[in-house]
Length: 123
Image 1 (cartoon, rainbow, N blue to C red):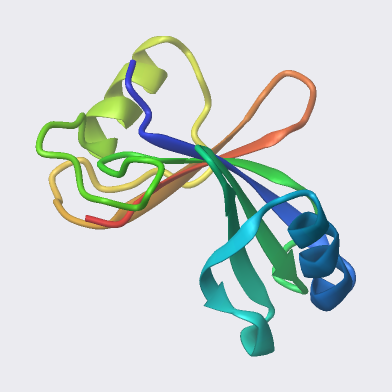
Image 2 (cartoon, rainbow, N blue to C red):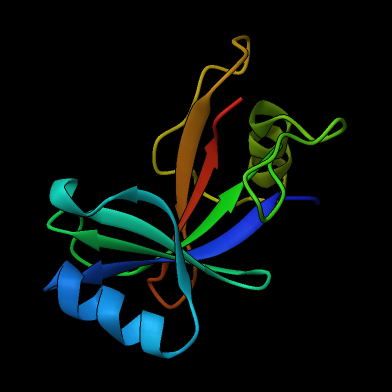
């Protein structure tokens, strides 16, 4: 199952301190707005999202239809098809999406250890 670009979305306490820390590790600001409390940091093919005050814990994030540079892929599995496959495998969907729709949508699942996984399709 192809889930798209992967990143870790970190719930941070102080976005400036977190940004400075990841800059020191060689990451660069790729996207976002620090004044709004979110940044996407990039180091080669590794992406980390920094989010202050947006959610309580860290989230594993996949973006169907995107590569690691947030560029649309010419071929990808739509999130609605992914949802069907997850449900067929007995995986509980936190916020099901309308499978008859199209375009941007997101869903969440929880792994056996309580880790949140977000599938967020932007196209």
